[in-house]
Every structure is written in C-alpha cells, then in structure tokens.
Image (tube, rainbow, N blue to C red; front, top):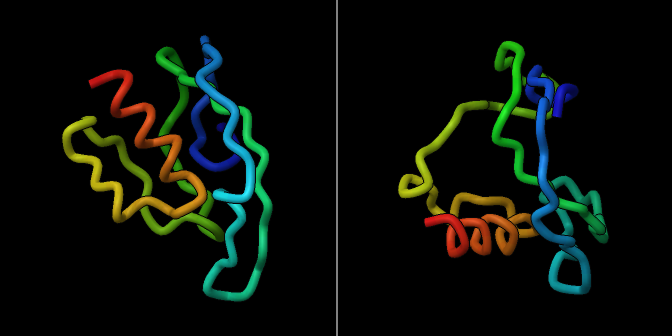
Length: 88
C-alpha cells in the first residue's frame, strides 16, 4: 500500500482471494499476467496520499456510490464488485 499510495496501513482485515482464469489479463502494452491476489480492507491508515508516478495517473478516494465498474481494470473488477455488494 505504501509503495503505490504513500499510505501506511494501521489496521487491515481479510476480504477475499482473487485468482483463476477470469483474472488472466493482457494489458494494452502486451504485458500478460495471471493474478493471484489476497485482498484486504484497510479502514485505518496514516501518511500522505502520493501516487507512484511511473504506474499511476491519478490517485484519490471515492464514495462507494461513485465507483463505475466499467472504469476499473478488468482483473480487479470482480473484487470491486464484491466489495460494493458487501458494503453498500
């Protein structure tokens, strides 16, 4: 979390594991990934929000009702969808 956002997690809880053929993805630049991700929810953190410039165009917080699934990277879309269903 710190590397890409500048924030340090104070408290996390397990949310889900995201893997399988549905999260295999080929990026527009040709890079190919088969993701295996262990996802946590972080509610308490500290630090200053700062993006990793080489990988992130914009970094900000959204209210859950502002999230548009079509704008989420395909490999992580199932995680965001499940989060919205569980917490909204």
